[in-house]
Image (cartoon, rainbow, N blue to C red; front, side, top):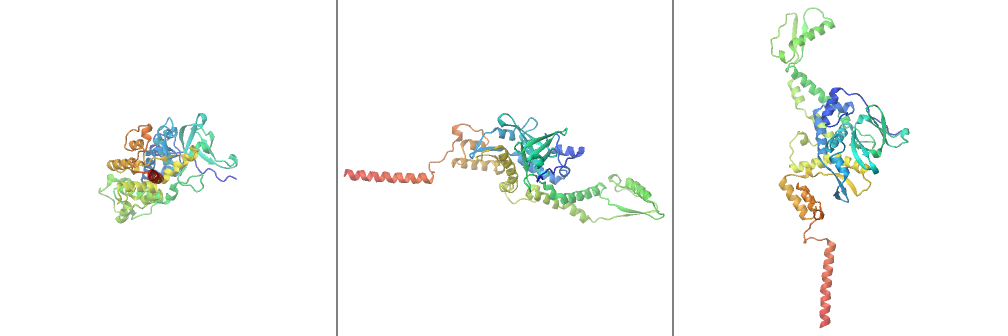
Length: 411
């Protein structure tokens, strides 16, 4: 029997849901996802967190290193600049990160040309991808991709980039929103309560009693509707209310402390940030007592780096065959404090031979020379390695010893 099978559900979208998703993921048409994620980004806190993380991932360039040295690669141009003819590399990274953050996983098709060279990368909607590993695939991991007409293509795992920020089986990603089901529901109900309160111009509900007679259910509903149309809403606020002696109106009082508690509560916001590992100061919940450099480094180390690693690990797994040739994100923007300090640190690294002339120029915003001189690391003559120092001392000792023997021979 199959040990893994598809858990993705396909459903139609309302126009409202489609508009929300399309505005969230610019430059891409035909977005598909599940209902929970589509509704979740209507929550301002979820939108803020997902937009923050996806934008930060999209803003960083992916580099290709060979033997520890940054090298040119057609793949980095696809990932950073032009993955296909529909959207830019930045948009592709944003789409992939946003979908993985919302749905737990995202998919990207690898299109190959002559000699298996990668020529394009396309994001695939979650609702159109089925992950299978059962008897129908001979227990091989296969991705079934359906088009608009329902026609299915089968792609091997080497032709799909499958990003999963959280998984418990290594095959299917799990959405962080599953842990936020109750919190999102509570926040939605709280905001709805406040919205209704202010929609009625802070007028609460009440009880309308008829002193004489017994009303049927239909009569009660009719009187209720007519009463609300005549007296509820902002237009009717603070107006004179006139009723005859057959009715008695008693307003229901609401403790304003409850309203203050609901309006000031940040519990759900904190919980959403905690699930996605966003620091409180990034969500504006508190003022950080760290410097800008410390705050950026803390965010990079404790939050962003784990998401970046998932992306680069998948790229290295599917697009490279040499352990000495790896993809990595250029995280320098999060390590840059201010121009003066950045310039000083760059010059110090260059003076000590930690970076080449071209690397120093690139870090300072200048165009690299891209020649033999630019690739060189310059070091001071005052620095040398321990083994060279030992060789120098031995040669010096031998030189002195040889001179003494010659003098002794002459005498």
